[in-house]
Structure formats: C-alpha cells, structure tokens
Amino acid sequence: MTAPLKIAVAGLGTVGAGTLQLLQRQAERLTVHAGRAITVTAVSARDKARDRGIDLSGVQWADDAVGLASLPEVDVIVELIGGAEGTARRLVEAALAARKHVVTANKALMAEHGTMLAETAEAQGVTLAFEAAVAGGIPIIKTLREGLVGNRVSRVYGILNGTTNYILTTMRESGRDFAEVLAEAQRLGYAEADPSFDIDGVDASHKLAILASVAFGRPVDLAGVYCEGIRHVSRLDIEFAEELGYRIKLLGIARLTDHGLEQRVHPCMVEREAPIAAVEGVFNGVVAEGDFVGQLMLEGRGAGAFPTASAVVADLVDIAAGRRVPPFGVPTAALERLPGAAMERHRGAYYIRLMVVDQPGVIADIAAALRDQNVSLESMIQRGRAPGEAVPVVLTTHDTVEASMQKALAAIGRLKTVHEPPRMIRIEDF
Ligand SMILES: NC(=O)c1ccc[n+]([C@@H]2O[C@H](COP(=O)([O-])OP(=O)(O)OC[C@H]3O[C@@H](n4cnc5c(N)ncnc54)[C@H](OP(=O)(O)O)[C@@H]3O)[C@@H](O)[C@H]2O)c1
Image (cartoon, rainbow, N blue to C red; front, side, top):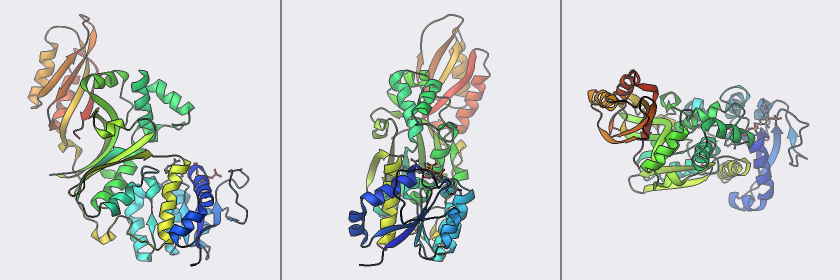
C-alpha cells in the first residue's frame, strides 16, 4: 500500500477537534477509500495545556502554527484557525510556498483572498480545498464544481447561515421579537457574543462570494456582494408574510442577469411552498439551477464540529487518493471576468410595510409616490382602524427596478403621515 498521507492540523477548536475525532473513528474506512492511511503528524493551537477530549499522543505540537508549513514530512496543512488575515493567512501562504496541499474551512480567507491563493496553488502544483468553508456539512462545492460540470448554472441561492435561520424560524414559531430571540440564541450557543458577523449578513456574504465563483467560474468578488442583514425584520413583518403566503429567509443569491452577475444577501419573502422555505432552524439549504439538470437542492447542517469535519475529511480523502480539480473548477487563467450587476438595476417584486396615520388621503399620497416611479401595486393590506393613530399598511408590488423602488420609498418616508422609516423586503420568485 502507498505511504500514508501525513497531515498537520492548525486549530483544535470546534472544527479541528471534530476533524481529529472523525479521522480516528473512521480510520479504517477512510484508508480503504483513499487507498492509504491519513496520519496526523503535527498540530498547533494557542493553548497546549487545554484538554480537547482527543488523544494527541505521538503527535508533534507546534507553538507556532506557521512553522507547520516547514515540517518536511508533512504533505497537507489543514487550516482550522479562522480569519482572513493573521496566522491563518500566513500559514496558508507559507504552506503553498512550501508546495504543501492546503485544506481549509476558512470562508473569510477564501472570500477575501481565494483567487490569489488558487493562483499560487496552481503555480505550485498543489491542491487548495475548501469544501467546509461553505454550508458546513453540505457538499455544495464538489456538487457545483464536479457534479454539475455539464451545466451552465443560471442561479444558485441558499440559506447559508444557521444562526440567522434559527432566529427567523424561532421568531415565526414563537411570535417573539428579534432582540429577545437573539438573546436566547446567544444563551444556547447558536449565536456569538458579538453576533454582527451573522446577523448583518457578513458570514453569508463570504459564503455566497465563494459559491458564486465556483458556480460561475469567475474570480471571487466579495466587494461585489450586496449585503443586508436581519436586524430590521420585525415580528409584524413575519406575521404579514404568513398572511401573504410567504416565509422570510435570509438568502444569498447569485444570478445571471442581462446586466451581469447579481450577488446579493438580504432577507427575502419566499413562497411558503418553495422547497427553500422548508429549511428551518439551524439548517442550511442550497439550490442550484442548471440548464441540463434543472433545479436541485441540498439541505443539511451548515455548522458544528462533526458536519464540518465531514467536509474537511472529504477534501483530505481526495488529496490522499490523488484526485485533483482546480479550486474553482477551471484553471485560474480561465476564470471569466463576468461583470457584476449593480444592485440598483435589480428587478423584482417588493413587500413594503409602513406605519401610517389613519386619516383620509394618506393612501392616495403613498400611491402617488409609487406611481411617480412607475411602481405598480399588486396588493394592499391595512390592518385595524385607529383614527389619528399609526396603523400598519402593507403593500406588495409587481416587478420593478430597485432604483425606482428606493426613490419611491424615500418619497414615502418624507410624508408627514408616515411614521417610522418604511420597511422593505424583496420578494423572490422561485
Ligand atoms: N464552527 C463551525 O461550525 C464552522 C463551520 C464551518 C466553517 N468553520 C470555520 O472553521 C474555522 C475554525 O472555526 P472553529 O469554530 O473551529 O473555531 P474555534 O472553535 O474558535 O477554534 C479555533 C482554533 O484555532 C486556534 N487558534 C487561534 N489562534 C491561533 C493561532 N494564532 N495559532 C494557532 N492556533 C490558533 C485556537 O486555539 P485554542 O483552542 O488554544 O484557543 C482554536 O483551537 C474558521 O475559519 C471557521 O469560519 C467553522
């Protein structure tokens, strides 16, 4: 049998410890699949004394993670530290420079520097693999890059962040407000102490930028991702969504349009019957649409020690077995410089919620502001009657252009009879 594949693991936190456990527990079947054993030679983390519940006897410890890249016996560096800069980046660059394969779960690093790292890996003749960076245990990178290679993908979208999906699901099921549910998610460990990365859509944007590159064979363009989080989604919006037959989901969407590639992360109204609407709680789901395959969806756990380890190990087995595919499916020189479509040119339907003073003529003023921007209404709900007080009014529109919608909302927001800034959620057609 071929010599074992020798790996060094940097980062022994949630994913690192999970990966080592999986490698130990599944060693036999992995050896059969890979054609050789996968052996952990060295590890690194910050605190050597910490008990991680894993057996590290016979494994070399490195105080300096970057130093792992210069161990001559190591074939693969597994980077599970995190962060777009600092030690993680230095380690990955050093590993590629030393012609070692790299497996990483680091979406921030891949979203910020993915194209450059892929170029280096290609020049050095080594693999750069990142299945675990997008949607945890869901093998969406391999599916898009290899399973769907016979297709031109027209759209890929999904629920890419479990924390926000948990919050939105719990808000709907319990009828509670955002702040209360967020606090509970933090207590339960589903949300970080500083939750902004998740709830402001940053994490989902990182994943979408990577996904779009793989799906559309284009350099990673994080700056081209339009990003809005879920802080403004209220209990009231969730109730109205139900009434209109929708669910509110934070989606990442990459779609080919006449103006180029749209990449956007924002709360969406999706029809309750759409398969993606059924992805609830901490689960992730990704839908891809290809010209030959049609639509397909993968759903599963987007985070957690074992699901993420499952993705890391799949990349390791590919390397051990000698299976090599360019990181983004094609040589970096063949990545298309497809233009990005500006958000102002986005076309779609909209949900608008206003708090308006209940008095004659108010609705006529709102309708006029929409008409002035050529926005046509599809439906309107006015709830309750409280003469002289603010009541919610909900409007949905036919397809219109984002720039027109924004101008109409600004005009509506200036009306004296409209209290609170207008709330808008895009309606997505699946
Ligand atoms: N958690 C998930 O479910 C999940 C899912 C998908 C992808 N990811 C990605 O996987 C990566 C790791 O995430 P995680 O959740 O496992 O993080 P984590 O639990 O915070 O673990 C990070 C590990 O890195 C070590 N570390 C930090 N700075 C270091 C340094 N300068 N040198 C050496 N080691 C260092 C820490 O050491 P100590 O233990 O000694 O502090 C810890 O073991 C991130 O890129 C994350 O985005 C995570």
